Picture 1 (cartoon, helix red, strand yellow):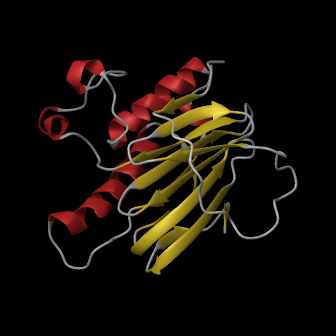
Picture 2 (cartoon, rainbow, N blue to C red):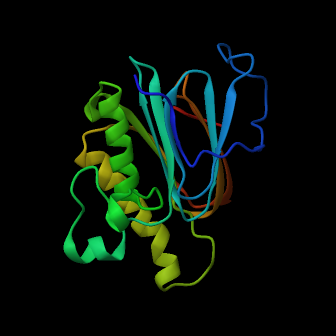
Length: 203
């Protein structure tokens, strides 16, 4: 299996989840904090955190291999791809570098990591979070979270991942924690009006 991949992999303090640690939590888990555009894929005693507004996070996890990851994307795609179609598999624009700020490219990064781990996308569970409206009103800014949600759902369906939970939309921001040793997600939502399938989401 390839070593854990983080792009660019920033470690930082994060807001804790209230309550005692669940049974099976490692004594000293590694903590990784994702900024917008970051992603991490790996295994072991790793806990990944991020804070979401209009951005969307896709969490993927293989229950058999106990490997998975989290990405935090900002936009569905690059404008050039919207006009001319998606890049070839495993390639992106700007010299062929994939950019985790865009949903389709973040998914390509996951697919590449899944392949390196010897797994198929259809074997992974997926959970979706974010896409909150951070400002009132309408227009292009208000449309970004909606387009991010649509893109995340479409990518999960396109690549055959098993959608297990989602907490999307509404107005407000979310603090998300994802455990790679268990596949569990913990969420705090400061807002209202979210669409949710609460299965396997813990708060």
